[in-house]
Image (tube, rainbow, N blue to C red):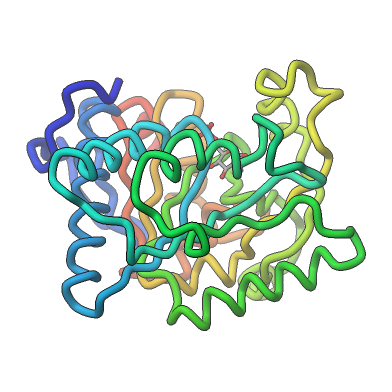
Length: 274
Ligand code: GLP
């Protein structure tokens, strides 16, 4: 899908403001990836030029894989350096060994960390091996690390079929409480467990908990780029962008921070928008 992508070549077929966000609809996911890779590579270069470092929030799942492949190509072909880039991943299963191939640590090592010149102690993930009694302390510490870096220049996001961002699952919390959620230990939603079953060889093997950046952590980023592709994401995209702001659809909470969020989606994911 990401083969032969040359950065900066493709424009969206529609671009509009919706619910305080910039929504870019591309003819294909491949076109959107090209634009997303270009956006990230440009942001990294601009941040390095302006202040000698860049701080990125990164996502996992199938959606961002071609983005990382594109950044690796930029690294190899155009000398994009990650040596002064700090990364903070959104989430990790719990409990989870970093050596487990299904860990997000292993995913990041496979798709990005092992293929670019990131500095080892600048590539951060939540630790799925912390004792459960200290998991929320670990989350609070993670939020402090990000704040001490001066915050995230950009948070990359995917969208769950149930509208989740990171592992912030649908809840019935008042919106104000959701917006204040820090990085913490959460219970996974049945839809998320079902969607992860293939990777884990069956639902029974999927961890029931996860560590996730909070909604407050995500919204504190200076910019947010959210990607969603395919018709299976269309209902969650529509509910996030045209539905009410509510905790039942965590993606809709992004509406509360106008001017910060860009959605890059394909025609299929945009199908229920209008
Ligand atoms: C997982 C991740 C999310 C991701 C979502 C969508 O649950 N925790 O961060 O955005 O699933 O995954 P995919 O891109 O594979 O559809």
